Amino acid sequence: MSIELINIWYIVAAALFIFGLKQLGSPATAVRGNMLSALGMLIAIAVTLFNAQILSFQWIIGAAVIGAIIGFVAAEKVAMTSMPEMVALFNGSGGIASLFVGWAALYNLGNSTFTDITIVLSILIGGLTFTGSILAWGKLSEVMTSRAVVFGAQRIFNGALLVALLVCSVLFVMDPSTDSPYLYAIIALSFLFGVMAVLPIGGADMPVVISLLNSYSGLAACAAGFAINNNILIVAGSMVGAAGIILTNIMCKAMNRSLANVLFSGFGAVKQASKVEGEVKPISAEDAGLILEAAQSVTFVPGYGMAVAQAQHVVRELGELLEENGAEVTYAIHPVAGRMPGHMNVLLAEANVPYDQLIEMEDINPRIDNIDVAVVIGANDVVNPAARNDENSPIYGMPIINVDHARTVFVLKRSMASGFSGVDNPLFFGENTRMLFGDAKESLSQVIADFK
Amino acid sequence: MEAVLLGLVLMLSIFLGFELISKVPATLHTPLMSGANAISGITIVGALISAGAELGTAATVLGALAVMFASINVVGGYLVTNRMLSMFKKKDSDQPGGKA
Image (tube, rainbow over all chains, first blue to last red):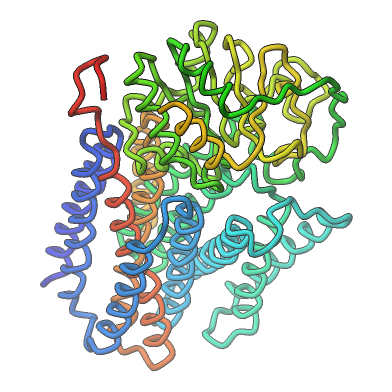
């Protein structure tokens, strides 16, 4: 196949990616959208195999089979609660692949300086995406502490790292060769940079990091596209890059913080929230069941704690029981609830909650005054009224779901420890708040048992 | 000139990406992200060429590694997205406002 013909097929593939992404925008067409995009990928891969530059296939087949098996097993086995970790790892493998593509492009003869610069970029972005994603995986799966790790000279260290990266890159581009010591320095430094970039970011800010790494994995592919002069890499890579940036932006807005603030300051390091004091009013599962039975409208507000307790299925079961009882049941979801964008929606969908019952924050807040019972399951910061009232709170200004305006609030909580960001929550001391202590899944099962 | 053209392609694609994604409802953010992530596995196209072009052992090994990682990304990304999306269901068996 001639290069021209291959490029025409690449245009077809790009069109399929665009249609695919567009259809991913609505639940009704999303499955088809994903398949269209997969078809585009299949076409791109298939026509590439006809490229006259490819002389031998044994390495390709071996590597592709191994990769496909790993990808297949991972995708089939992963639990929905571990989806953030999975996406982080996939981001990482895309990043390192682009690093290798850039590196291998050094062996092409007669690269221009522009090409050498893009090679450095693909190695750099690919490398930091890889280690950043691995670290994000580590934090999400709690292999390591998920808290923000901050040390004194961090900014100075990172600054020095950045300067070193720049210097090595310039020196390398001035005299590019496959065994240049600067090449290895760039690889090592970009790995280190990825680690340093994710280290100071706490678990609650993970949705931002995952979206950002997603964006980087696209940009790495895009840079690799420049390095080997390939249109489809540039088109697809930059679309993914842009998509990731948009999501990052949405996540930042949902936390009322700038991207710079998320990236460079450990959470809550600066301000000290006003102390909240008061008495919590515990409630038994039995009494909670009685109140729910009388409720006309119930909204569940899930958070990461629901994922941890694997409580999504009992939540749905209780929701169905309440519906049978004549109540209107909704699920109010904060954009940054959980550890990645849309995390809660996926968990509830897995538990067979229809997506038209999932309500976004802006849509539930105007009518929350008329909700009889709001059940908060493992959410904390996203329902913390201090974000509205207390100017000293580290989360002040963050839009929240105003559950405290509902007629009654149940908070399911393991114990009285403060939430992920370590911020006290005045909601727990509210006049209309009742605390249902214990494991969320067990508490709800008990409510269901009493209800029946 | 080549670089300028590629730059133009880059700019247009970025705008397209912004346009396509900014209207996606929050419900679909996770599948959207993993779907976009699968697309970033397009780097496999470059990997295939490097792995098969016989530019020496080092380049072939680097290319093969790239093919392996990119296929994890592509295969895993699309499958997991499909798995998630197929869970999103409308309330079909129910009458509007009726019993479950």
